[in-house]
Image (cartoon, rainbow, N blue to C red; front, side, top):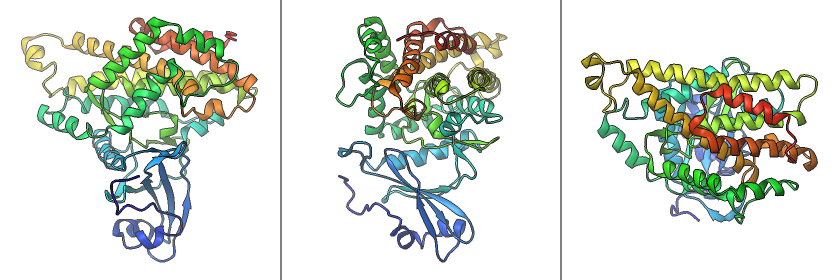
Amino acid sequence: MTANPAYEALTIDTLPTRLGQVAALTAQVGGGDWQVQEVGDGNLNLVFIVTGPRGKAIVKQALPYVRLVGDSWPLPLYRAFFEYNALTRQAARDPGSVPVIHHFDETQALIVMEFLEPHRILRRKLIDGERVAGLAAFLGRFCARTAFRGSELSMASPDKKADVALFAGNVEIPAITESLVFTDPYYAAEMNSHTPGLEPVIARLRADVDLKIRAQQALQRFVSNTETMVHGDLHSGSIMSTADDSRVIDPEFVQYGPMGFDIGMLCANFLMAFFSQPAHRGDDLADYQDWILSVIADVWSTFEAEFRSLWQSERTGILFPATLFEDQGHDSAPACDAVLTGIRRDAWTVCGIEMHRRCLSLAHNADFEDIEDPTIRAPLEARNLMLGADLIRTAETITGAEEVCDRARGYNTTDVI
């Protein structure tokens, strides 16, 4: 199950004894009696809230298997090492965007980190119809800053290459993305599942050879393009928010990949939230759906503005150097435009693929899964699937997020099945 014989999974009962002498943890929560609550609802980890006389902290420990499947699907514990290193880099590249790390134990594959309160998982807030002030600006800046500052637009080439080598060791976790996201939706993979009633739509997608070629081309870029360090699993379930504050969590799918990957996956999850809303909302349906689409548009406008600002102020790497442009009296803005064009293409392609995998592959999301009646759920998922296919086919010609939002509005009134 694990190559590390010293590893032992924590329990509510054993955590106080095993971690009671960890100074970084006692500094946060205090000594004495602790209350321990297990709160993890994901597939890969144990997550505990530890409460003491001084405060609270989160203890997250990797499991050596996928919970959803069981011990028949083993996973390496080293992913905690990569998550820790991802969080430290994200904290440096966009300060305040991720939880503060207090302690890391590589042997036990556990991280002690800041307890975020009263933050809730953003996906649950979207299902409940809650709004988050400043959400789009926060996410747009996060995606731009981590993309730019993790690339050779900004990093010294030896440092970037060393980072690529480090994260290249995270093999099994990105391999989940390579299969479940890019490939499995487009054939009858063993662990696939879907809502009854979607069969005609699924048949259309799997018969579309051009669509599958485009999906595999996106996979080719994902596995071979090391432009920047990507979160790798940036969706509404890996963001925690209050009414006006947000943080990004859970970067264990981290790797170096295309700059457009994170923002594409993020937008896909907002679009799925949009399409699922008729089953969750009442009289405020139209207003709330409009707000979700405004988040997508504003994420992109913030992303592009921040990226252009960093282009002007932090372009210190080997790519597009000032010696080729400004120092010769040339405007580098067209070069920035060209880079952003490539980012948009990758992002909208990934967006469409993610919209497919969350309905057809393993590990669906709660936006749709919380809709108990499959006769209600299937038509909403069908709209999502058709927009996803539309985005994949036309990603290189999409001019901006507003165009995507307009398409979403159109599919939202279309009876696909």
